[in-house]
Length: 280
Image (cartoon, rainbow, N blue to C red; front, side, top):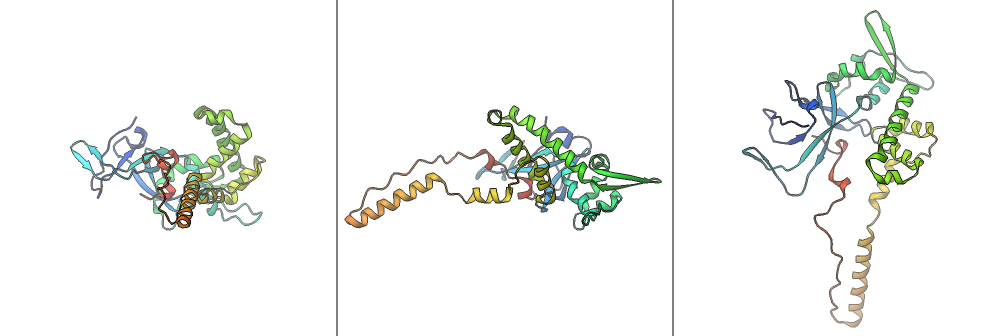
């Protein structure tokens, strides 16, 4: 289910698809700028009815929206999907305990922890943090006050549970996962969860905890992006050979027939840009 909401006073019209729970009620929701848990870049999230959703962005080269009697020239599409707030709050709680070496760190109150310089909108997550962060924190109560401190063992147990659930779900979503071995599916699940974790310490600790060989996802993405396309190599080699032959004979050779490229075809992974790469 989705709903249509107009934000009054907006300078430009944008189309956002979100669940009813994310945009229902008296208020359509608030767009918060928070730090992405992995990149630490300022990132836009939708917060409404105590649900936090990350925003993904898709845009074709040409397109527009017909919204009733109104035409929006910007044909981009934003999609809001629920995200576990523990992922977003984990780096904040990690910094707040001020852990040094074997020292487990300090207990802090929530309003102190969520005071992040340059990001005042973390204060909106105070009720959400009170409900969700106990699963990865030790707590102490002094009178009417409650103090929190992140616990590594609880974080690893929570991450292991996330990976286990995802490992069971992946084969149901894609038959390719069902055809591969369990270990590779486990590696894929860790890789997906790792998109929301810093390499140090959480991602490395998770790999070690699960008995897997650590692979730096940043290096993997960089190497993949730098790999040349096989078809492009063949085309370049063919054109180069033809040019050399023409120079030797002094005759204009026939134009090399290039492989037909489908201009409207896109890789499905390129259709969406994660919130960490696009700020609203």
